[in-house]
Image (cartoon, rainbow, N blue to C red; front, side, top):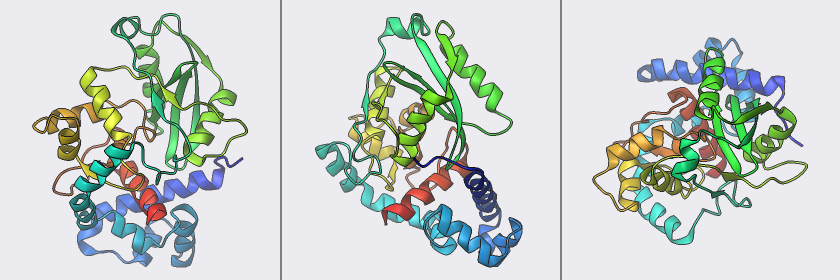
Length: 283
């Protein structure tokens, strides 16, 4: 079973630092040697880091993060998403052999704030930094990425959302979900259902996100069109920003129409890292 180790944690931290450096200096088109120096590695070892973490060269990875590449992807997204909607969840996804279902809460369940539910949660390292995951017998309620200065606040926020539930920290249980979500390897399969709470509009948007193929990008406008509300792109953006189940509901695959990266609840740098990682594995 593949699980995260200290070297992988360090790899992501260096990738994150490299992406921030690129963001700040992209107009100067920094050389790989400059980026390597910024993360305190030789150019040789920096190239090895990328091949180990991203599965591609630094130059190619950086292309995935450019606005022009995003615009190129978005120019194809209309037909792509239409076909995906016709056929259901894309078989090109790394999750292609997993059935990702969702089970929305009723208004009464939402109002009860988890009364009668037992929620098991854990904090784990992933290829994209630490995350908190919370699960119930009915499904995953939260998967939220953390940073060093937000871990306590995010944990408290999740608990507050489900203030009437019984909370149990149990990393042995939640690790099985992490292995299956990020690596598709686990000692036993668990159903990746999701216990969503939100308005009908939000749930419709989140369902649309589940149909975006792995490594592909669409715009807020395209999502609005495919849920039958073409003038609601701003509301679509708000619904995407309210997503509580990161990565599995792939809100990171939605960009601004002009190719801008757009927002991300867990940080623009992390969004770019996930997108570059996905694209390097789908091309």
